[in-house]
Length: 361
Ligand SMILES: Cc1cc2nc3c(=O)[nH]c(=O)nc-3n(C[C@H](O)[C@H](O)[C@H](O)COP(=O)(O)O)c2cc1C
Image (tube, rainbow, N blue to C red; front, side, top):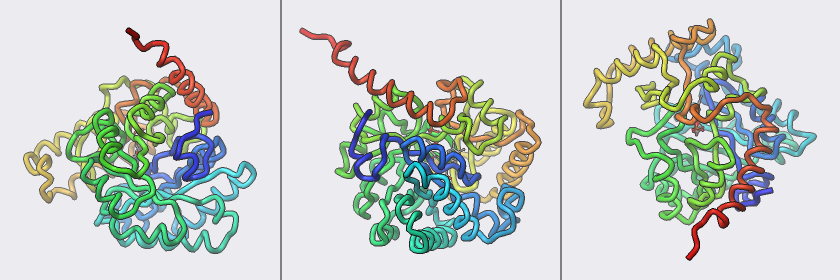
């Protein structure tokens, strides 16, 4: 048992949040994580692809069918409400709020509010909205609607903005994390304690967390819990392809690369597709590293599209797969329940042994 402020704020047993992980809905994973006593998360980013299929890297119809995005989200919320009813598990929705995504963000927020208003079980279990990848300012309305509002940030500067906007929880996301990362490579070991020092709002560490030792480390750095992405992909229940899970288990820590994604840089599992994306990225230097607007989105879109197609065809070298540096510390495929239990008991044991391992006068 490891109880922190995060448990009190959200009403969860363990101080662990699932990271939002598009392009999938992460419905099964959200149910498994919530039933294991942590915070499960539905991911909305891929659902928006059905709005503009020609501009989306994924085959939206294959992934989500032909329902409009709010209906896809509504059905997901209903499924996770049903799946967590018996356990009393708690879940949330991740809604990226990047400027390119803003119409979809507004639509998903509206749908999440409506889903809670129309079902008392959903109102009880869907407690959190996690916004990411954009300006937090417009989203304090989430608190007025009764949600606990977490916002993901890559820097102290952005953490202060999130605090000013009124976020209940700040997720400090280090550069070692999977998928979207910042232009500036600040990793969790520097970012998490710096953010904890700069704001009074409770901070959750993200990027590189996968086990009891890293959870204990996050708490020592001042965080109230951790958010995990890559580690949770390699679980029995996660919604990801078997090839993707296996790739995470097999890779060592150097086998990721950061290159351009459609909405900024992303960390990919290294293979020839990721290398092609990085090659294309390097051609955009210096604009890439200076964060200037880029005009080669079509080529990146095409590379991502080919990569997602090859994911379906299980072509490991050319499939597009995201993942964090923490792949080097993951070597099994447990059930989500066993994983969360293991992390909590290892972290408790680690925190107990620290005083014994400390040198005394
Ligand atoms: C496959 C994948 C997809 C992701 N998609 C999203 C997303 O849609 N929205 C978001 O806020 N973060 C996204 N992330 C970031 C995670 O929520 C989380 O913060 C990150 O994975 C933490 O670092 P870790 O991978 O080292 O655990 C994604 C991460 C991965 C690995």
